[in-house]
Amino acid sequence: MIVRKNMGRGKTLLMLLMVLGFLFATYNFVSLIIEHKAGGLLEPFDKKVMESTSSNLKYHVALTATDAAYSQWQCRIMYYWYKKVKDMPGSDMGKFTRILHSGKADQLMDEIPTFVVDPLPEGLDRGYIVLNRPWAFVQWLEKADIEEEYILMAEPDHIFVNPLPNLAHGSQPAGYPFFYIKPVENEKLIRKFYPEDKGPVTDVDPIGNSPVIIQKVKSRLVISLMEEIAPTWVNISLRMKDDQETDKAFGWVLEMYAYAVASALHGVKHILRKDFMLQPPWDLHVGKKFIIHYTYGCDYNLKGQLTYGKIGEWRFDKRSYLLGPPPKNLSLPPPGVPKSVVRLVKMVNEATANIPEWDSLNRKS
Ligand SMILES: *[C@@H]1O[C@H](CO)[C@@H](O)[C@H](O)[C@H]1NC(C)=O
Ligand SMILES: *[C@@H]1O[C@H](CO)[C@@H](O)[C@H](O)[C@H]1NC(C)=O
Image 1 (cartoon, rainbow, N blue to C red):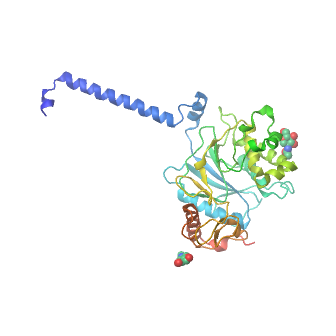
Image 2: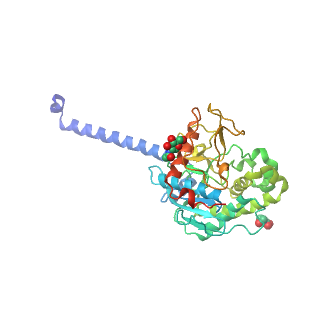
Image 3: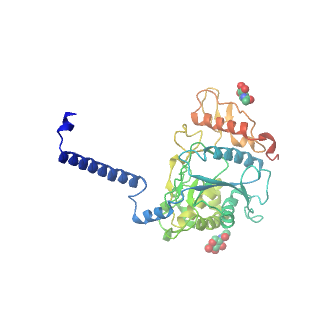
């Protein structure tokens, strides 16, 4: 009180100026941090692209699928969790489409937004059904009306476990680095499709097409994106399949390599996000990761020890349900099994308990 009484007008003014100065400095500092976080320290080119695209960060969830019972039950669980996380804070999810590449409608049309596309012409898939994925994307991109500026390429065995933001950065897509996709170790094969004059083999990212968040259209400043990559991806997939040596070496991940090579041919590098997915049983914790990918069987003995490759006393493996959906209320794993596996089974159970007509609507084979 005394201090204030003794303060003249000059002093008050001085203090006001000091406070303003402090606020101004703070403002500058904070905006510097925000700019840094938003990638403000990138090349001016990238920044321009960012400004031109920041208006619509939402991405469309695009799920390629077939009408087989095995694909259907996974899609139903996936869509259930999409609906649950879509509007949670931190999510940039837009609409959802199941791109059904069996060429005809199935009985899930009313449950899941679906776009029917044609399979590859008879015989062209060489019995390798996933070769239909790139072709499905080409058709969907060409024919569908997609309002979002970005696309998440997803697969039926993905479960959204945390709200997923748009991990792409302007024109730079984001992908997940798979430990088994190794372009550098397969240089000889990769070079058949990515010749030396294109650049070093390290240009080819250790990824597949899914999960990837990528800008849909080629914009003014963007070099090339999904609409350009997709046809190349079809082409490279078929050429790899036709090359015996490559087909034999890449096996079931051939179409993943094909996407990695196709995007590199268009000069596209992906931001590699390890937190994009977790893959039980190898990844033990969910933490802040976004998608559970349940492609591996989870086999444990009753002591909670992993018996990978050997059928466990307790198990969850999607391949146990090739002909129809898993039953509701699967038993939870024994004590000692990693949290990621427990979470997966609980999420499957929650979905199957709540999806109407769980047992009856799936196609019976
Ligand atoms: C892939 O593209 C190359 C060059 O454009 C072309 O010669 C070839 O026939 C295409 N292959 C397939 C299987 O479409
Ligand atoms: C699920 O199964 C457990 C036994 O594994 C049982 O105790 C529980 O009541 C079941 N829940 C439902 C909803 O059926």
